[in-house]
Each structure stands twice: as structure tokens, then as C-alpha cells.
Image (cartoon, rainbow, N blue to C red; front, side, top):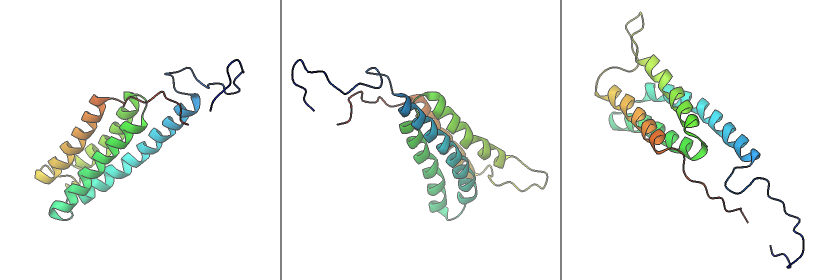
Length: 141
């Protein structure tokens, strides 16, 4: 869009350069909240799937956690959003790894259980350590 010299532009920026607009912050918060619900589903599903077929189950379980960590890093605007989703993934996983009164645990302390637990936790730790990605301040045209 070009404007003739001296002519007033009818386009007003919604936010100062370098600061996200209010709409972008609301969408980011909604995305992180939705990914928090998905994190609980991925954690519970991964806890039951990680023993399914020898390499396929653990790859699906850890791959789901890694994919969710990458996605939340792209959607979150702060490390707090990443930490919330990581806690919502880690909570059910740790709860399912505890010994209930009936002595039947979902996640055991063997190789497959520890790979699932530490693989997912490491993915979220790396995403949290990297923080949020730098976003371009260039307006979309």
C-alpha cells in the first residue's frame, strides 16, 4: 500500500512496534489453554500406549510429548505458558507412576517407563530452557 506524500494514511497501527496487539495475546492465551487440555490427554494416552508394541508404542508416547512441547513453544508468549503446559503433562504422568493400593501401576520403573518419563520431561525442559521464539514485528501484507 502506497500513500502519496503529504496525504494522511487511514491505517492506524493497533499496537506500538515490538508489542503484540491485544487480539494476539488473547489468541495466544486461548491456544496455550487448549494445549494444556491436550497435554493431559497426551500424558494419559502416552502412559497407556508406551508399552503397546516394542518400538512403536514408546515412539508414539515420547513423540507426542515432544510434538506438544514444540507446539506450545511456538504458541506461548512467555515461559509461564510453557511451564503450565509442562506441569499439566507431568502431573498425570507422575500420578500414574505412583503405586496405588492395588499394586497395579501404569508406568513401571523399567526401561520403557523411564524412557517415557524422562523423554517427555526432557522435551519440556528443553522447550522451557529455550523460551519463546522471537517473533517478527513486520506487519503482514
